[in-house]
Amino acid sequence: MTWTVRASRRVIRDRWIDLRADDCVTPSGQEIAPYYVLSYPDWVHVVALNTRGELLLVRQYRHGAGDSFLELPGGVIDAGEAVEAAARRELAEETGHRAGAVTLVSSLHPNPAIQNNRVHVCIARDVVASGSLRLDAGEEGLTVEALPLQTVLDGLAGGLIGQSLHVTSLLLGLAALGRLSLSAIAPRGDEAP
Image 1 (cartoon, rainbow, N blue to C red):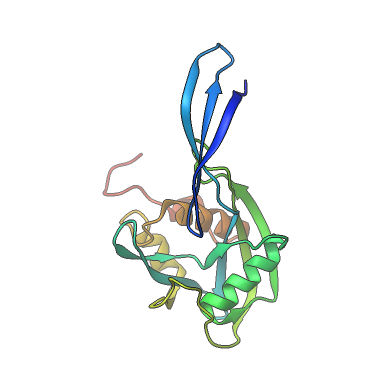
Image 2 (cartoon, helix red, strand yellow):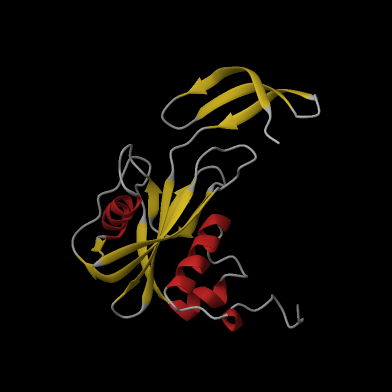
């Protein structure tokens, strides 16, 4: 049930965005033109607990929302870079920590309606401090926060981590680490689901 692309043109491409417009036809013959697609490289999110069992998070400004957000360490996977290598690199760059072991947990599509990339969720084990941060352009002001896992879980429904992709990655990573049970996530308020 894929669409046929009759034409495709680049609308804009720079270091931040790659937008194309496709002229499409559905299997039933309906024309949809233009249909916009954002092309991004794949990303990685790292779920990392330090030796005290605290979750390593970063807080950084996100201009689209005009606010700072608490997130998992992560970022763009460089061309030709393995997912696990990107997870190690991003963890070191953004938190100053290194992992003894990194494992891929899941690969998801952030928004398959308009984006063609994936986000890869990795867990990092045996994480220890190893040096200073090495931040990319646009990451100035980034801070590292190590929070007790239960504090993070208790704050999810209230928006402690306000980026939905990071919440999903966190839950998948914690489940893979054996650190999350279904009872750890409760609905907002006193109502039963």
